[in-house]
Image (cartoon, rainbow, N blue to C red):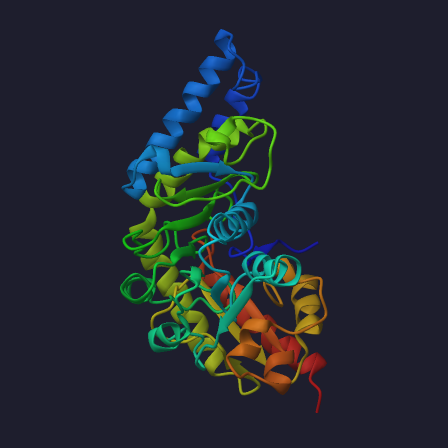
Length: 380
């Protein structure tokens, strides 16, 4: 079995050694329910609140605006559906884009299909960007919620969230939600103008099972789960306490290493771009400007993505053929299709997502493996 070369960091990331160490120390001692009123429960509850305060300080918001969830998919569902339900007496028109994560798109589709909401799905240009003018034209008196992601999880383009926030708040009373999963600790990202946002620990080298909601205190949101007072009633249920406690440590480590990581990631991405551009049968789908360096979407014009993915996997190299949330489905990427990409370019798409643990040598091995895969499997 060859060594594993991991280029799927947009899907999930290796956990910080410091976080693993903390987990191993905490689990034997802190097993009580954080809602219990005995000393063990109160101690865990206090640790969760300290984590909440630390996260709020990093994000420059009030601790009362932070809610823990099981992850970003739950966070997106809760915010989108909960806000839509809470404001439906004001209007039932919602706006999102055609290139959102499945947890966002399917939340809106669910509201359309089962609850009588009307949704406008904004188009994107050939680089995957939403235009502020299109958003302005779509806003109506009965628009109550707009949800646009900060960084696209398939091609990496950085949406102009500040410009979009200005349009929303100037021309409507709609709430602005941002899926910021691929942004936190990786790019310059501000919550200025944002009313609600979703985050995830395991996208920044934390443990799975912990997500965070930011929601202004003035924003109403109807809980989707009932049965407890945890998280101020917005997300009841016994929390995954230790994972939430370590979200703050994960974020601190990610932010502290960001500057060093960013330079390293840029070097690796530039190396990959230069190498892939020299392969005649390959094309780069990600924009080259206003993009997160952590995500690079490419296409092989002669080998279907699943065939190439399987070949790379046989060489010990892990990439994605699409966003992981959709990777077991047979239809091509909705993001690339919305960008106008068709035919062999759409069928041969791969997502290479880079992490701080990757090396130039691994990038070289990936490029050579792509060349070999084309030579062995190309459709002539």
